[in-house]
Image 1 (spheres, rainbow, N blue to C red):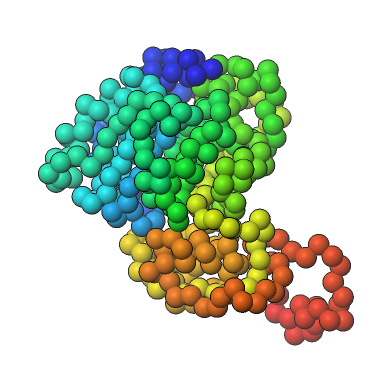
Image 2 (cartoon, rainbow, N blue to C red):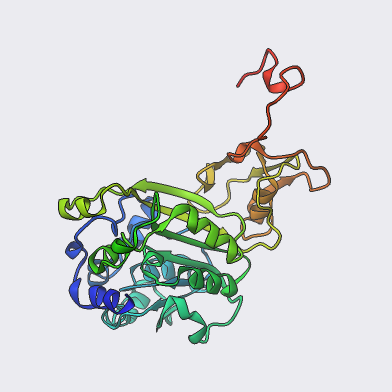
Length: 351
C-alpha cells in the first residue's frame, strides 16, 4: 500500500483541492499567532498541504522537533518560526515530489524569519523505518505528525520509534483520523479510501492499546471533531463507519500508572506560557485556569512536573498518601457506594 500512497500524494494530488473528501482538511479555528505564521509560509507550500489538525503544542521556543510525514513542509516552516533561532525542526517525508516543494523554499523562509542560517532540514524516508535515518536516540523534545500515521502500514513501529527518539519528559503531539470501529479488510485494501485517510484509520481503542505497548502509558485526547464525508459515492462505500479527526498527546514518562490515581495533589498555573495567559489546556479534560488550585491525578501531576511545563506551575502535594481512584479523569469506583458513609450523597452536596 505504501507505493499507492506515494503515487497518490506525489503524482495524483497536486494541490489541496484535489482531495476527494475533507478527511485531510483542518477545520479548527486558529489562534491569531498561528494564522499569522501560516500566512507567511510560501504559497506553493500551502497549496500542497494535506493535514487534518493543528500540531503546534504550547512552549516551543528552543525545542528540537521531528515532523513525521512532513509533506510539502507547511507545518515544519510554521514550527521553525515558533521554535526560534535556538530550536531546530527535522521533517521526514517519503514522497519525492513533496520533498522537492519543501526543500526549494528553505532559503525563502530563512530570510523571511530573519535567521542567519536555516533551523530545519528535510530527510527522505519512511516513518515506519526511522532507525534507517541516522536520528540520535532521545534527541527530540517533541514529535509531531499531521494526518499521516493513518497512512502507515505499520503504525506500532511508528510509535515505538517515536518513543525511542523522544527525550525523557518529551511528548508526541499529533493529529490523525480514527474510526469508531475496526475498518473491514476489503475497505482497508481500497487504494482511494486509503489515500483519502479513511480506510487506514485505526479504531480509536486499538490506537490507545498500541500507544501503551509502545511505552506511552496514558494517552491524552486534546481535541476531536467528526468528519463529514462530502462525497456521496465514498460515503456510500464506507457505510456505517464513523470517522473522527483527533489530536492526542503522548508523554514519554517512565512509570505512569495505567489508571488515574488520587494522591491529594493540585497544581496552580502561573499564567506565564506565551499565548496562554488565562489558562492552559493540557487535554480535553484539563483546562487549568491561572491562579486557581486545580486538583489532579498522579499522572497529570507528573506530566506537568517532569516536563517543559514545570517552571510555569506551582505544585501542591506529593505521592506519600494514596486516596484511591481519581474520579476527575473519567474513571470511578466500580462498586456500589454505601450512601450512609459516602460524603457525596449527603445533604448539602453542591454537585
